[in-house]
Image (cartoon, rainbow, N blue to C red; front, top):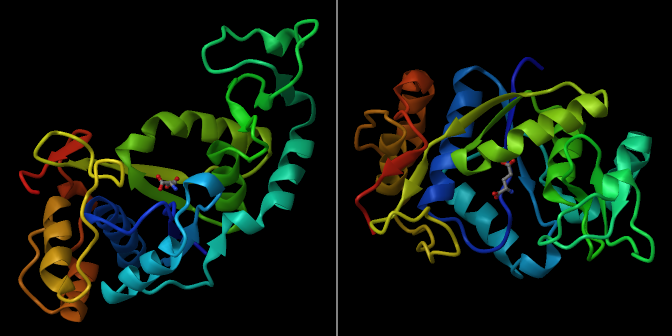
Length: 255
Ligand code: GLU
């Protein structure tokens, strides 16, 4: 496959305009290149996931006219693959006794009398398995992007800081590194990223076309007023990544 993109939501709440903008960018980048596109449910952080949110997200994606090429992969079913990746990293992995506030020197060896809480990776010095036993997003996203053969990641600029660590892990595991595009984040009137934390409203499912058009307009595309299917067909040929607004934020003047 020469192009395989993905949308990887965390089911901590329903889809909102910010996540629709991200999904739209990754879908259009894939489809306009004749590529494949998949959806992965990043339900790794069990305590933060909301019952029913994954199903709700998939229903919303369907209502907005997205179609994915493979069954949805759930990270909650992938613990064995993450454990295997940690084994493969071998000596690069070290146990760490620190909390976030500590100045950490555990890469040189656990201080006497301390017990390991998490597992970290040498060089990157970020967590691979958390103190609560859950695998970290940084590890899972790399293992799964490689497992699913993702060639191109299109996601929000809020994840830009995570990208170097992910590239480091791909290389350490001997896996091919995908290409990355980070798109600007939609901000609400208060300047906050639209997110579940800032209580961005869920996407309306009864009349998706105007909202989808809005999402495309945020992405710099001059989308016309059309029903959903025709809007997608317009966008598959008109989509141009170079029209994305510059910078890491889109001032929405909405909400
Ligand atoms: N699951 C992450 C999120 O919802 C996105 C991961 C990614 O695109 O790499 O923020």
